[in-house]
Length: 282
Image (cartoon, rainbow, N blue to C red):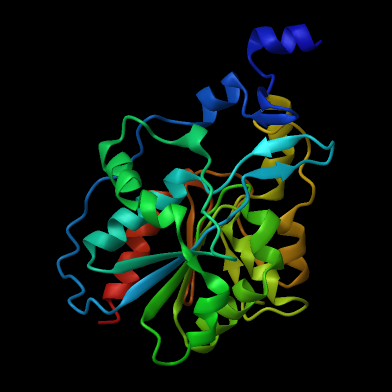
């Protein structure tokens, strides 16, 4: 059976001792060398350069699956960089933070290497990815006078390993809601909402995200080397946060000031829609 899997390309690729990246078939089906990013003329632009967007990423490079195998993960680069391109075009400055200030991890196997706009932004932000802000220190200074107009939690499987369990993430989520700021997230990013515990400021909201059903389908294709250790969608439902999509086809959802997308194919529209929402407040 393993031999057959190797022939058809569904065996996860071994990267090290008990460490795996997606199979050749999964990469062919799920990873594109160019995104659908296209620059947009927003008609107006934020002129107040003190207004910033806070991006909170994962420090997790290896996610332990249910069978004990380690998945080489991090934040998905398309979900991270494509919205950033639109926010910069709209005139907003961007800060990058991780739960403890450790380097932000990327699913580098998903980099769209033939997309010049994304790859140029990746190169420009390498220093900030390597030395992000320490969220634990940043949250001590969050108040009504903070410069952030929005918070963004990008996706990638690594997110579920640290953001849902971070007190600093919990403080950011609660601050964003209490200050009536825009919350933006995509794919596995909404797992960060679990950080607030048994209740959530986003209870009663509807979101677009990676559905649990999709994660359950990924091991047979070799995208994941085993079943997920847990599923964030069912835990969000327990908080009365509903994932509305059953598949991932680029859906973007707006519920009050919560803007969410289901995965990489939603990144471009998510960036445009959220930038317009921020500009409309000026």
